[in-house]
Amino acid sequence: MPPDPVLYRTALGACLLFVAGILAGVEIGLASGVAAAILVAGFAVRARRSLTFHLVPWRLLVFVTGLFLVVQTIGRHGLDTVMGTLIGGDPGAEGALRAGGVGALFANVVNNLPAYVAGEAVIAADHHTQLLALLVGTNVGPLATPWASLATLIWYERCRAAGVAAPLGRFVATSAALAALATAATVAALLIAPPGRPTITGADRTGRQVAIRTPLTSPYGYRYGRLILPS
Image (spheres, rainbow, N blue to C red):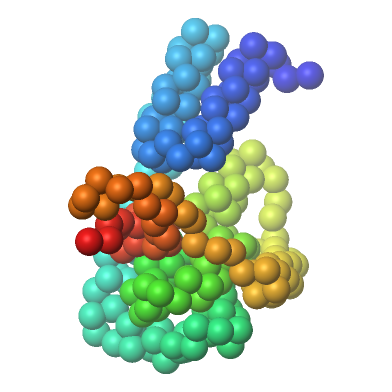
C-alpha cells in the first residue's frame, strides 16, 4: 500500500491520461503539459513540501540539449556521411536490419534522441520500413548504457539517489544482450508483417473527397508528416 493512496491514484491517473492522449493523437506537448499539471496539483494539495526545484533533472536537460548541438555540429563535418555508409540505402530487409542495428548502437554510444535525428537525416523519405527499423533501434535498443535514453538516465539517477546499487559492468552486460535480442526480434517482426501507410480522407482542389496515403510522421517531429493533396 503506498503511503498516500490518493496521491498514488492521482499520479496513476495522470500517467494513464497522458498515454490515452498520445494514442488519441493529441500533440505531445499538450498531453504532457496537462498530465504534469494534474500531478503538480496533486502534490500541491497532498504533499506541498515535496515540490522543490531539486525534482527537475537539470543536469539531464543540459546534457541532452548539449548532445543535440554536438551531433548536429559533427553531422555537418562527416557524421552524416558515416551514418549514410553504415545504414545504406537499401529499402528492403538489409536496409532495415542495418538501420535498426546502427540506430541501437549509436543510441547506446550517444543517446537515442540525437541518434534518431542523425539516422533520419540520411534515410530517404520513401523508405518507410527502414525508417521504422531506425525507430525500433533507437527506442528498443538503448538499454546497454545508462545514458542511452532519458528513461535509463532518470532510472539510474533515481537508483543512486535512493542508495540502490547498480553495478555498471553487470548492467551493461545484461542490458546489451537484451538490447540486441529485442532489437533483432522487433525488426524481424517488422519485416515479416510490414505496416501499411496510414490512409485518411481529404478533399482535392475541386472539393472531391479522396483517400490520401500519408507519409510517415517522425515521432520527434522533424521531417515527415507533410500532407500534399493531389491536384
